[in-house]
Length: 160
Image (cartoon, rainbow, N blue to C red; front, side, top):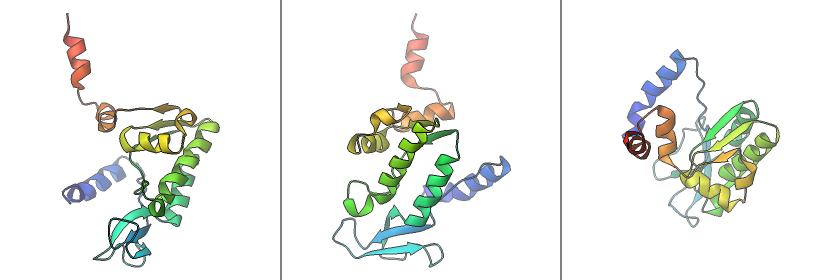
C-alpha cells in the first residue's frame, strides 16, 4: 500500500523524461490466494479489481500489449513475474512473457532477467539458456541499475 503512494510521482517523472510505462489493463482475479477461490476476469474498463478479490495475474489484453512492447524494444530488463506463476491458474501472464522473451533473444534483443522470482521462472520454464543474461541478484540488480552503492563491491574497492 505504501508503494502505491509514490505511483503518481513516478508517472509524472516518467512523462517529464518521455518514458512510457506500461501497466496491466486486465486481470485474472480470485477471491482467495489460491486456486480454489472464485476466479474471474476483470479490467480497468470494468472497474479494476473489486473489493473481496485479488489480482493474481495479468489478463490476455495486457499479455498481448507486453509482448508487442518486448518485441519492439532493443533491451529488456525483467524483474518480477506477471502473476503468481507457482499456481497454474495464474501463470499465463508470466509464462507468455517468458516465451516472448525467448523470441526476443532469438531476434537479437538483449534480454536480462533481474533475479529473484524472475530467475526462478527461468528455471521453472527451462529458459535460462535462452536469455542474454540471468542475474541471481534480485533486488540488488535494480539497486545496481539505480546507481546505489553495493556493499560487496564497496568493500572490495576499499580493500588495500
